[in-house]
Amino acid sequence: MSESPAKSVMQDGLAFERPLNELQQKIDELRKLKQDTHLDLDGEIELLEDRKRRETADVYSKLSPWERVNVARHADRPLTSDYMQLMLDDFVELHGDRVFGEDRAIVTGLASMDGVRFLLVGHRKGKTVKDRLACNFGCAHPEGYRKAMQKMRLAEKMKLPIVTFINTPGAYPGIGAEERGQAAAIAQNIYDMFELRVPIVCLVIGEGGSGGALGIGVGDRVGMLENSYYSVISPEGCAAILWKAGDKAPEAAEALKLTSKDLRRLGLVDEVIEEPLGGAHRDPKGAIERVKAQILTWLRELQATPIEELLAQRYRKFRSMGQPTSG
Image (cartoon, rainbow, N blue to C red; front, side):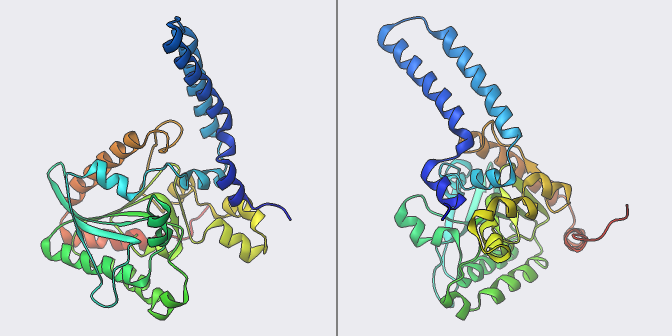
């Protein structure tokens, strides 16, 4: 039996990055040699660094959709918790859905950034094995979506804008979640977000899978990072349904048109935020700075728009998606 693409990636890392990692290893060896022997190796190091920059740019300009999916899942890619730590000046977390319990897969709280106050809602995946299990790897239960909407309603009362960070392979599909109304909770969030009388900014920072992403994905501005993906289903799920074979995930990724380039062309997202050379996992701080600048720009634009016009634009934005075009 052939090994699934996902399993291969987990074991061996990103295959297309191996030549780049080998170059980095040579650069590190030369730097160590220079430190230990005091030899003048600056010229050789500079040549290798220039070669690595050129090869990185070339490799990342030719990534397939499946390869971009794996970049979106990279273990070193910044998560919502990293954005909170490096982007925010202050954050007060808000817990619970007042019905069932606390869902760690979604974090909500009052935040401030460069003097701008807003409500932050985001998928939380966790970094350690223990945290990932507690967060269901970013797959939220219905209580997570109900918590998100309760806090959004609070933001509306406080006249605070809302910023959501989307990073989930999908909503949690367990029996308990279904018994507690998973589909209804997501559908209610989508419906209610159209009526919230405050600006809403949504950003896909990694994985944007299915209804799990849409449950906090209705906004006046919807953007995504260059190497993130946004799709009705994961490539593995699509392959399992259509071909009954996990090794068809690359073909499914191609057919789903889930990359930032595809979605921008189709008009499903407003903006694609360019990542540092080689992906956000190579320069998390640089990626977070770009995201911060874009969010502040969006919030300034939206705050200047009268609320009735904002609601009308929000409705028209999503109503026009999927409309047939002539030609």
